[in-house]
Length: 353
Image 1 (cartoon, helix red, strand yellow):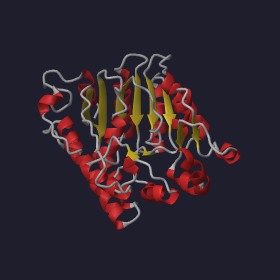
Image 2 (cartoon, helix red, strand yellow):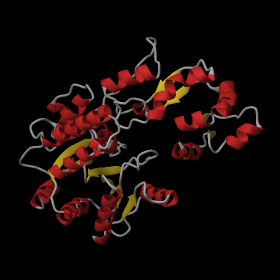
Image 3 (cartoon, helix red, strand yellow):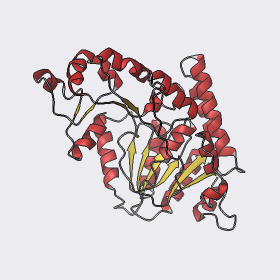
Image 4 (cartoon, rainbow, N blue to C red):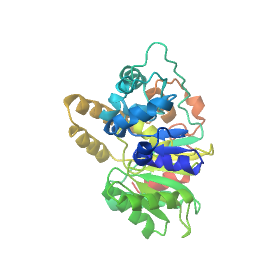
């Protein structure tokens, strides 16, 4: 919410964040706002204040990142499941808009149920296909030093100043990747939840502005803590140095590449031991149903990486209930690209695996 509010202010939109606006809300009967951003937790924490003030001017209740509502969404948050009762509690008779870019059919049905969207609801759905993105999976070396060398070689093949993201599973891994890139003379930043908020903001802001002054790519090594608020259309590559927790998560993370419509790459460095790590994380999920769900997601990610016969694009779109053919890929994945002309970086990485 706070990042989104900052962006809104930058665009000269009159907006307030609930937490920041508490004093103003108490002192005035109404606020001349175009938008008010609030997390579900904050709406419930300050619900009496919100009820009094929102009732006067609310035209619509919007839920962004709606996949968080559903237990089948890849980033489920229990507080979001309460959203279905928020209009009733506030006495608001307004439309509700649920927005997500990563929901499967099962997740969509669950969102509709939990948000109490009745038979009058309308669903607008765009294609999940990102035709400008190339999808590849390359074998990742088992030894950490060799794997980091692979990552460095991949980033080095890009022209100086190229913007990219390297996603890592853990804070330690993101720091190791960051250090390896810097030691190779590549301009790189680091972002994870263990860093102070101010430092995280500085790192993301510096990366968003671009860099590459030392001759390398303007890369940021991050965990999935870096997600909300990314507004950088010229990201040319997203490299997953370890596996995403789900295909929905992978689609969202890799989808941060090429938002300007220009050709961009999405690469997964895959090692079987990373799947074992995902399974270990799944066993720590609370509740038997949650553990089963997360284990199923981990297996879907593994199957996607191991399948060298089916077009990556077809596999990914099928997961979101969208029918596609390999002809739509036009050689823009490692399965469909002609054997005679694989990207030079892929052969290089495979020699280091």
